[in-house]
Image (tube, one colour):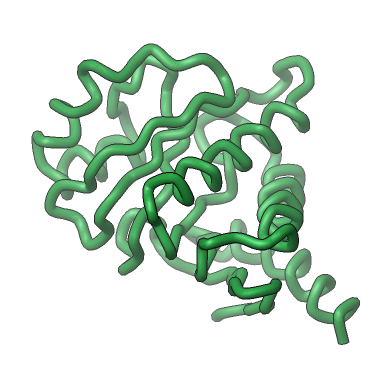
Length: 180
């Protein structure tokens, strides 16, 4: 399952996949402000990537909401992880904070020479941002950023399961329809 849209010199795609297992330059991890790798994807990163990632993170936190840091990805398929401290559900100005976090991720990717990046639906898991809100803000913010011109060639938004994919796919399908 893949939906793709060309935007300027970049491609925005939605796929059903585990963001931590994608073969890509970097993936985004929706991180805790203390940068501890807890349960869920944090645990997957710690186990699959090895101890070097935790070691790198020791001197990088704490982060404020919308801050991002870039580390290597240890033994994982990606070369880098962009750890993004985004807002939690029912936080004030959640939409704007989520957009700013996504833009900061894209800027960090560009400043680190990253040409391909995978996003999860930002904040929709443990942090409780409703999947429909997350999907819309994630895809629309990335598309707006790429539309201004970017060095990033490929941006992939990964739905980890059918529920996430089904929230993401219609948004990019609508963009494709409008462009036709």
